Image 1 (spheres, rainbow, N blue to C red):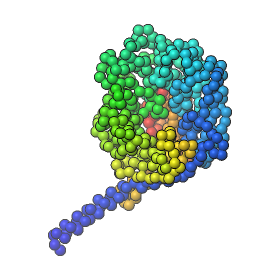
Image 2: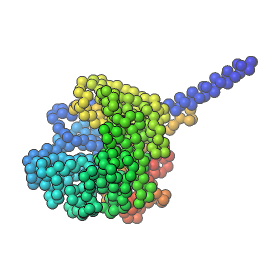
Image 3: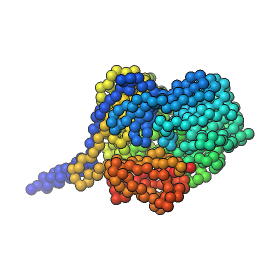
Image 4: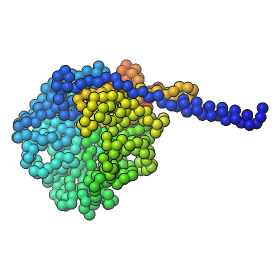
Length: 525
């Protein structure tokens, strides 16, 4: 046999081995339309807001403010049975002067918070609403000074399940929802801003919040006062980077505070359309470290929030106002961004804004509602940047109408023009040889961060009874809890002796199940 033929045969075998190994790692992803429901059928179901409950069900709320009154109704979508419940009367809030105006709404700590000021013009007080599914609690605060041009966007934030911080006209106020009491944290000269600055507050997912003297297009530097979630001042930072004197600090109303891979992200909206992100974390209790992430390509790009992609990457949308119609682009970064500043441009979506949802540790879905079809693309860590793309015919709609998406376990939900679509996302890996990836199972915890006074829920995608060990950051086991046959358990954040845990970072690790990754959660006061 000739040497040439032998070498050709060897190369063929090597190529076959390489191709076989690659094929063994190829993900198999299929997305199908499981169900669709008309929200307004067979009778009208009106809603203003929708949130996802810890169970995966969707909760819809309708709040109607009239003279002296706020009426709250609601209904639910039960994902396991694919049914809508009837509309129920949740509650009525009275003794309000005039007609209240909604300032902010957000989901935090497993509950839904809404803040109204009343009346709309020349406001005299606030209504603080807290909803847990259909359970309503509220407080009316009528002993604070609010200016006529007061804007709650950036001036209120929820810092724990019972605490609200408010940047009022004359002071920084820390309000306790449970006791209906408050304390002044800062006032006088230290609190007041110069004419080029705005007052802002910002809640952080690490059990901190900050009051910001926000310099908007002036020469003075920003001043950041950092507090813990109990209102104790920790330290003050003077932000000397020029970015801070030509930008506005964004809001932290997102469900997860843009908390990804142990870091959280604050938007900085700059002059014109230019913007940046701050990648932040606390390397020690008395220091906040930040890294400025500029728009990847164009100065006209407006950066969106980040979505976790696997264990070391994130996906970020950017809307480019510099193009003719405005275009949305998606970028992939390795995390932390500071250590890996290079981005990967993945795709452009034109003027239609895509919705990004993390399905599990390996898959992110990208979905968009076009005029007469729904577009869904799945990205997988095993073969990025290859897209797994699917389209589904849908009734013709105005593409400017709002679209809402949620993910839960292996399902993606999209609400568009009064219709709720449920898509099943099936994921597997080719098992051609021993190098194939084992089945993927996940463990989730909700809420996260969790209040030490509350209860958290663990849920594994593997539906069977198993033991879950809880460890602190020192590696000490503090408790062991049992998941039921559905892979779920509730825990009151007490150790095996019944004592309450200390605030901090903890890990939940499934015992004897290496195919389920541990999950990290934060316990706060």
